[in-house]
Length: 390
Figure 1: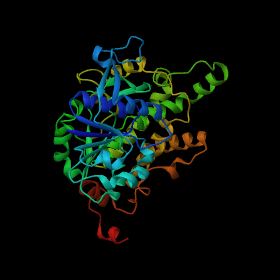
Figure 2 (figure 1 turned 90 degrees about the horizontal axis):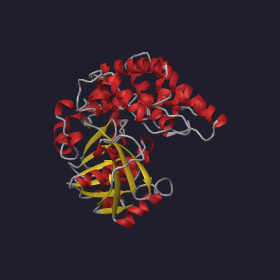
Figure 3 (figure 1 turned 90 degrees about the vertical axis):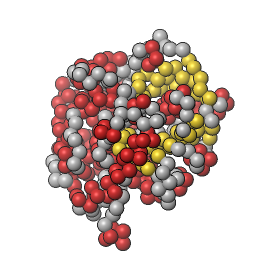
Figure 4 (figure 1 turned 30 degrees about the vertical axis):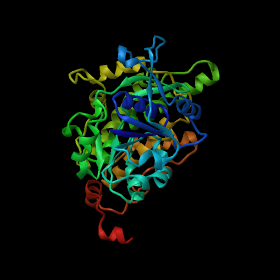
């Protein structure tokens, strides 16, 4: 297949390599300029492809010094031209921070074509923005996590630390699920998991994004550790997974937030799956393992950081994830004290109003819909006549 990867950062670079390695014809599109990874992008342009250190091939899932051999995959095209990259592709995968979805949708959605599969990873309901600007009829899909955990380690080279065993997708509209899964299953083994494993709709995927829980709580609990190290041990940095997520406080918060998330999922007609159980499904072939034990094993081998509280773990996952969760809870009459408290506290630390900035139903233009109208819209892309007239 012809695959276009949008985003030349960690996840986009790794997926471009993986898709080329799997035999797909891959185009890599960079949409930002002078923000991040420009040296990395220019190195790939010069090399006409990408180097990768894939530690998963030797059973390593850590950023260890004992790396696998560096290998190279040529890419069909590496460009900054959206039209050149998108037109003619079978699949377009968007790997950018979800905070940039509205602006990027206005720039590129006009190039999406009928029956083209457009996958947003992660999504947080961002396909609604792209659909708004798209005159044609692609199939939109949203992922809850990236197919891999990777890091750009030097210009032109990405290191893959971990690959998911499974990655569930949702589709917008949900009525195109069968079409979308037939295409996605040919991309990566992680997507070839059967129609029964697809999420019900895009809000289901958004709430299954693990970052909505582990990033927000992990970095909030880590904040005092960051402050302490910055003042007393400036050459050291704590590890979010190893240190912050080893505390009783973190797991009490996770249990409460997870319960609120599952209550909203149930109200949306979705299967309420605990956070740890969903992690086991994504990460492990053997589903008979203890979910907490699997999480603990990953936690021990995770990389250090983040190095600052002003990080996308907060600035993306709080307004894009928690604010959406809170908004859905309000729509369906569910109390969200843990979610709302975490949004307020994270915003207070950074002197930002994440409720106002957030991807709420109001920000999506859906706050006036009834519960039934909202579910009809994300299922069939049909709005009531009164909304269309407005």
